[in-house]
Each structure stands twice: as structure tokens, then as C-alpha cells.
Length: 213
Ligand code: ADP
Ligand code: ZN
Image (cartoon, rainbow, N blue to C red):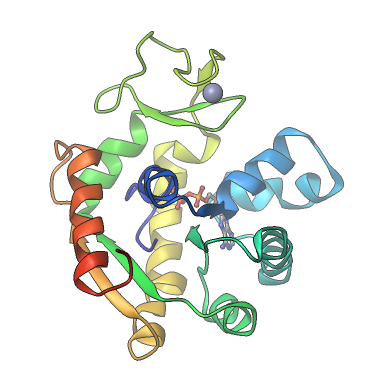
């Protein structure tokens, strides 16, 4: 699942993973969990994340290697938020072949509108939006009942930095994968498109390309 910060990668990846009964690997979620638990790794990476910078490649590659090992032999997986640099993509080439890149095209105003109203469950990491994807009860996770919070890196200054990092380091991956995987382009040019509609489009494209039944 490929696209700028705030494109909805995590939301769509988790919906697709459950629909297709495959695993979801979200490096962002794993990284936030390490930070929350204040592990040695968490302490090492917290400053990068809070500033909107990328966590160093060697650390993220190791995380993904461990995760793919855990789920090997299953139906497959969807990566959300990885790879983000050419180095990460090269490392992934040695781990697993990628069938398809689902590329989310989202205008900058939509990104900023979404991120400023995004809220995350402090326990399970489920993602809500106080304007577009509200929980049933305000401030409380539908899935597990715990409180929602705003990510440190969803503050406007940090969002600007994340967008810069995306343009400089991650967007070049599109040409890296040009001949290596199928591309599915999904345009999300309005904040009002329901996630369900996006999922339907993605599933349709995956079928057209014979990647799912
Ligand atoms: P978003 O895509 O909305 O920025 P993520 O949850 O995917 O959110 O990532 C949040 C932060 O976690 C990133 O800004 C970065 O600091 C770190 N991170 C996540 N995935 C990676 C990765 N593959 N490489 C480096 N840093 C990462
Ligand atoms: Zn929750």
C-alpha cells in the first residue's frame, strides 16, 4: 500500500487484510508500539518519529524481516508504510516478491484535512477521524473501548516535514517498481469518499489483474 502520509494506507490495508484473510504488516504501528512500551528500540527511534523523519533503514528492515518470518506459510500479506526508501525496497526484494503496488493518489489539502482530525486508539491502534470516520462513541475506540489520542506527528509542522520526506525519499520508489510489480492506481481526491468505496475499487482492480479470485 503506497502513498503519502495520511493517504489512508493503514485504514485500507487493515480492511483489505481482513477481507482477503491475509496478514497486515504496518511498520508505523510496530514502531509506535515500541515507543509506547518504551523498549530499548523505542527509545532509539522516538525522536525520528516525532520529528517526522524516517527511522533508519537497518532498523526497519529488521522489523519487516522478523514480521514476514512470523507469517511465512500463510496466504500472504499486505505491507503498509514499507518500503519507504530504495534501500528498503532492495532489502524487501531479498525477502519476498511483491505482486502489486496499490498506489493512493491524494491531494495535499485532503492529506492535511485528514491528518489534523485523525485519532488513534491508544490500545489497539485502530484509526478514526473525528470528521470523516467517527467512532460510535466520541473519544472511545469501537473495537476495544479504550481512549483515542492524536499522534504527536500529526501536528501541522510535523505533517509538513513528513510530506517533504515522502517527496524526497519515498516517491522515487514508483519508478523503482515500474517493471517489478503490477500497479493499481486509486485516486482519492475528496475527503468524502467512503473507505468502503475505495476498498471496492481496489478489490475490483485486483480481480481484473487476476491477483485474487
Ligand atoms: P504515515 O504514512 O501516515 O506517515 P506511518 O504510521 O506509516 O504513517 O509512519 C509513521 C512514522 O513511523 C514515519 O513518519 C516514520 O518516522 C516511521 N516509519 C514508519 N514506517 C517506516 C519505514 N518503512 N521507514 C522508516 N520510517 C518509518
Ligand atoms: Zn482500540
